[in-house]
Image 1: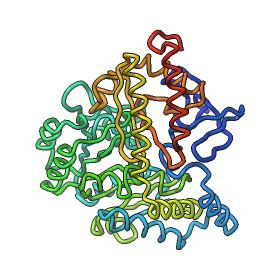
Image 2: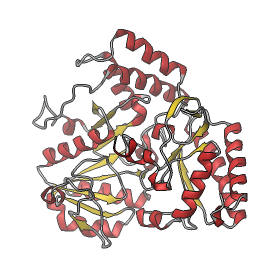
Image 3: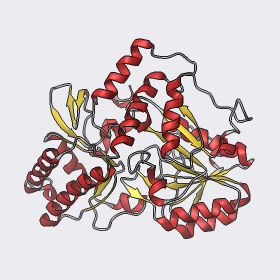
Image 4: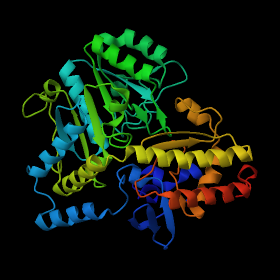
Length: 417
């Protein structure tokens, strides 16, 4: 496997570390192949909102496995999950299951182009929407950059249809919007960005996207693969009270199994085959194991609505970390929403990828490696958000803060940890 891993961030190159291979997980804890225990603040990048190996989810998977692991045909479970999602997210009137967040965002872009009969897409620097050719584009140092591929293997002719703008920059967006609005199929955005650390969109920024796309008969796509069912029951769009035309989902809706979905307004979704002309398909879409796990998790979340508790616990964790850093004179800022959070070794709370990039790489790497050696498992990149679960109680939070305090006392700013 390239780098010894099946997804790049797992290689720990961002912190000059080595991959950790895990064997099992329970509640708020991970256990690696060498028997080491970690308090987990990644939660499989979001879906373990109720903790690892939740007995009801495990039972649902076992029960379905006895009935069959895949049929390549419809099941009632798919309808159950679809109904639960639509119940929680009012902007979604119809939905289609897929197998990953990348597949979900890719499909929304194709659908938007097919529905509007336009070509151009606007995305925002620092928002990662999966490794889709049309969306793996980066912004340069100017206000916006036309068609610069962010990876070899992406043809320039394809990249030229994607325009990037700085995140949370209303003026930059409006400038480029007015230049291309007649051929603008969609604007895609993470309303709460989880791939430049944790950076929420401002209300003015997101409201401007909604207003402008509506005025040009373009579509607004919210990528809530990370924020969906993590920041609130109705996702970020509930918090901001903004209804996108299409929403991409993943993570939580599969209960930890591979899954994705996209949904939106009925007239747009009906452009998909077999009703409409836009083709999209997948043999394992709506896989019964993923749907059994997802249905169980969604029912648990709906019943318990744990988001106030999650945010309170995240605030306690981050507030304690901030106090420790401030006492040591280390620049440090934090933010959180529901069970999703981020921290940065910078005095100013970042508002975009440029701000995150400017935060201290050296201290971050030293701090993360020390945390991992002491049994605290944070995301191994300053460009990734963190997650807290309902199983992170006072014991886990206080233990985490004690360990962090000891780490800082050893001299994080002097390269001694």
